[in-house]
Amino acid sequence: MKHSHFFAHLSRMKLINRWPLMRNVYRENVQEHSLQVAMVAHALALIKNRFFNGELDANRVATLAMFHDVSEVLTGDLPNPVKYFNKAIQDEYKKIEKIAEQKLIDMTPEAFHDDYADLINQDNCHPDEKFIIKAADVICAYLKTLEELSAGNQEFQLAKKRLDNLLKNYQSDEVSYFMETYVPSFELSLDEITLEDPDNA
Image 1 (tube, rainbow, N blue to C red):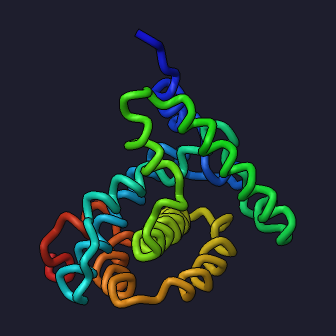
Image 2: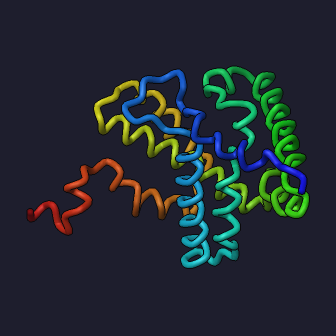
């Protein structure tokens, strides 16, 4: 039986730290981030389907989101100030990401090659799926800034402002619903989210 290094590569997602140029109160790795993005994307798809006449497969969206950053096991997580310094760098990095995606696809187990190619190659996403996953990705970065600021880390002030502006590109009914209904809890303490009515405690 031919060996495949695919899953060994994926396991290294936990070794890649996000926000590498910034002081973090809570370290976040790509594996943790990918799980959170999958959870938020799944919720966004459910919200869209339940309340706004969507027809997304929420389970597929969640699985695609789990794999949305897998190329970083080969490229690493390039800091945003570098990645978005100018359009030329941004375009070249996208090319590098595509090469990394293909390299991972090439090492998938032969019996499951098409299955994983469908998940790893971001071009296979339907535009509605891609929008939900990207919106979830931005929301999760935004939540990270809230958590850091709540812990007193002012290093994330400008990042929050940048993400406030970036979220405007992902305005939709399901994103607005999630932001209004669930995001305020992320600025509360454990006691506050545990008590049913903290104001009357």
